[in-house]
Image (cartoon, rainbow, N blue to C red):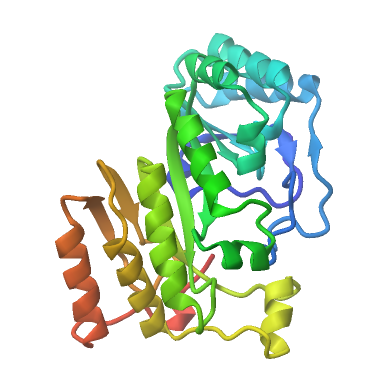
Length: 289
């Protein structure tokens, strides 16, 4: 397989074939993210795609899922992306689901019919970083879209039949705006109503603008207990039809997995017990991105 640079994939794609169709991220301007800094975005050639799929056909027959890397593979122009999915279907017919990262811009660039065609040719899930439903926070981190746009694009891709997994980031608004960020994010999640939500806890990465702001005193990190309080407020403000809310990423202080709305009361009670000191939190040295 032809791999370049820092490849990122969701935790749920750990057992998937990783097909790197693009390198880097098409936006690469989020102030908290250091995954692709210094890496110029590009779309690989069809020949490399074909060679990697042929390799996967020989060596990965045991894998049932495939993830198209890197940071925003949905940005690939529709004709080429459709051709890639068709090749995967022909050469890897045992693959049950194809996933990729998406953002508001890449979803907006595809028509409803194009998204439906991508779904019909195997695209089963897209992962989108909402990060926050709070517009001032989204603007401050350089996300490139406001909450209305994120909500509309999340609804759009799901109308095509593609499952959506949303990532949100605890601590992103700092101390002053923590509650506003949590409640606004809950409202945005409710409006999108995704199949999956993954809540991560902010970890500052040296070399990123947000880390620079922290060192200069322009951004104040919140405490572990404040992270939990933010998570509680977010879940309390979130209403899903039948969504799985994960907060069990390695960055989180309290592992949590809840099916909403069924498990909301249980999840809030778990957080309350942790805030009261009756459940130990993950020590700082065990946290990771």
